[in-house]
Length: 325
Ligand code: GLV
Image 1 (spheres, rainbow, N blue to C red):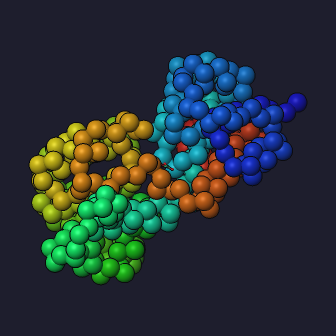
Image 2 (tube, rainbow, N blue to C red):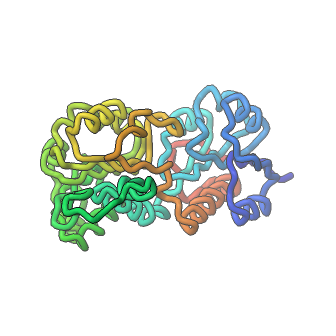
């Protein structure tokens, strides 16, 4: 008898076909975000699940899903999954590392440039019919070339952002609990500093840390106060790494120059303050959203699910200490 899996959000046909070749598949075709009750109902008789960051996989849910053996996230971040609870319930958890690094780094740069050069503010000005004449002092921005870029979190994505800075002749500082290999530092021309030094010296601060209890509000009022008055903050990592209320207050008071944000503390809800501010570029969590990369993410998640339920050896297992089989 085929094992049963649940696909919690809409995926590409290629991923559905792969799963259908191996399993009896139930899919949330409507692509609604299921609440905990509906998700528990859907998973109660399933062996595996393909989920996204919109699905919270925690102990109360797992207690209601006795057959579940694998939860495969369509994301590299996995703060929606309680790994310890998965391990306790014998559930393998996987993510999608590697396939989205360059696409996410491209988007961090999209936000860096758009924020520094006030692109969305300028476009609104045009669309509102306010452009009367060319002016020397109109919409003056921040030079990105030869500026200092501060990268918080020098993992795969942070390094990809740093490599792109070479083309802008930037000085790169990074902060990470673990130094990267000397050859990586040399290739990116990056130097490791403390977080406080990075914040004080960088013209542009770009965040690339996972969300966890340790990184909750890593950038709050104290950290923002250390930044240069002209500096910009870019977050393509996770909401909650930045204290949104503190950021809104700092932007309102002109304590920093601007922010480029793809992720938010209570997304999809936004802090209303962001909508009133001109010096913020906002995006709806799309840093990995190129057609090719989102397909690769969905396929990798599906491949993880197939491997987890067939061999117990998914390529991107997060909780290696889990009891398998
Ligand atoms: C997206 O946010 C991801 O973690 O892949």
